[in-house]
Length: 75
Image 1 (cartoon, helix red, strand yellow):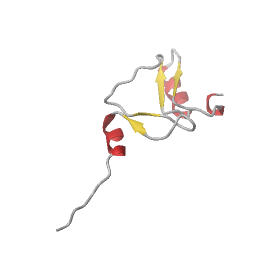
Image 2 (cartoon, rainbow, N blue to C red):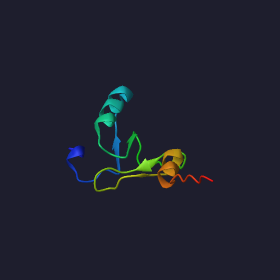
Image 3 (cartoon, rainbow, N blue to C red):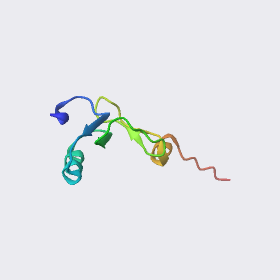
Image 4 (cartoon, rainbow, N blue to C red):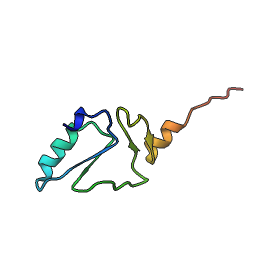
């Protein structure tokens, strides 16, 4: 049901079985999937969405790389 939505910024999976929760989380099409919590954002970890929640990342090294455009000056 979660993948049937047009948005995919964040999702959470709640379970007493950590292995099953990780398997479900891996199938969800969202930028961040939390297990047994929701909304915890660490600025050292990339954060982004999927589908109409946007593409691209903020935070973390990967987010910074997405903002940079290399330039070569020769001479």
